[in-house]
Length: 215
Image (cartoon, rainbow, N blue to C red; front, side, top):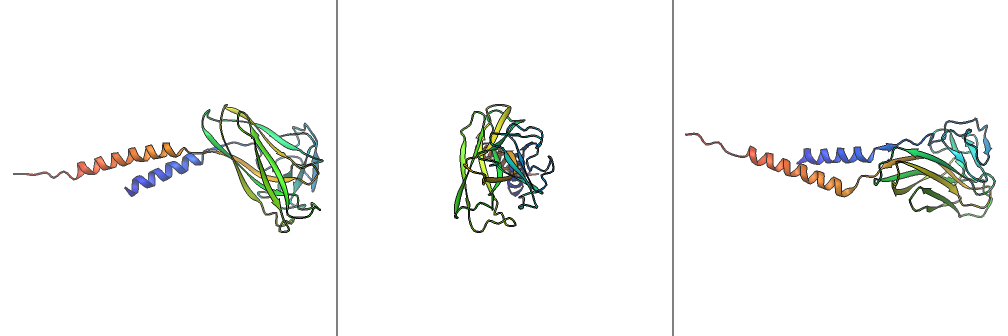
């Protein structure tokens, strides 16, 4: 039985680890930000894999504030409400997936704290979700207090467009890094698989327990 449970756990882990390729999900490939660089609306070359949405974004390196992963991150409010979008392929229609992103906020916001920062995540044929990050006195350039947010959706197409956008009406927006997507295993499927393996194991044990009587 222990072997069967271990096999189920291994299969479940493998299923949950099936990742979809997000191009430049940690924003390490692109122009040299030289601190912080404003990327304008419609820019589809400065940050490979991504297209910049209205009002632009700030492309920031570790000399300004710490990234969650690697050396670079984005403030999704360049001049006002900005964002990024990417079309991603490799989905199985009907399969549930989880997009995860590390989120913080521009630590130089002069507003009184705590201050709510809002991030919109959306994809084709799924309900958009607004996430709230609270900027507090603990947020500094060297201690960004990143949190990992998860957005789950069911793939409606093999290729889907994804948007991550700030909802802040100023230049001090949500900071994001380390965008990734993986499949979410269906609990019912794993239960049926493990139940089947358990039945096979029980059947094999019964066969092994049959005594052979000789004259």
